[in-house]
Image 1 (cartoon, rainbow, N blue to C red):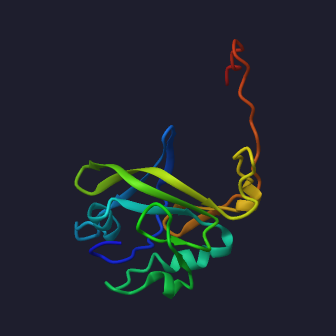
Image 2 (cartoon, one colour):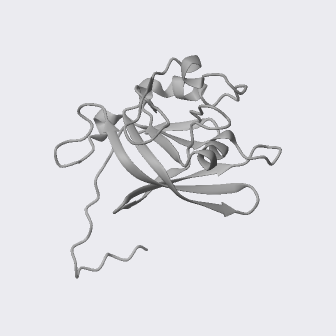
Image 3 (tube, rainbow, N blue to C red):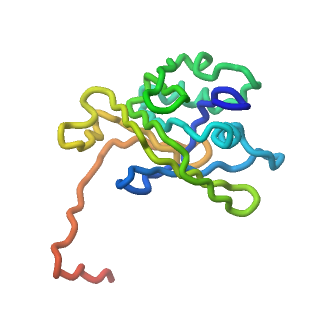
Length: 176
């Protein structure tokens, strides 16, 4: 929400940064003409935002939000998604997204002339039923997330696996 209106742009470059406080980051590149994207302009105007994790069920609708809509067009409406009021920040969240993270801007770091890394503190988590248990462990199968690899190439999380850490004092075997 800001001078560019509501913006539901999907970003592939986001990651958790820390847990005390809970933080995340995402990267915003400039437009082809060098101007800042609406997402960055909105965050500079109102230093709050919501980050969502998408799943296969809403993948096509999420992709519609990547369209370069004209100013004033409601992206969520075009994509058939529902805006819900957030509890602690002004921008709304997307009801259909299985994970919704309300954030407050901590810092924007400029890299070169084209890239900006936005750091936000997560002030509220929302999860659909069954995704997080009482110990705050995520059920990845229930979440069923998708990830963007590059361009129009995405991946599905189909076969999660575990690798236990080596015990303290034990040296990992040398790879040959």
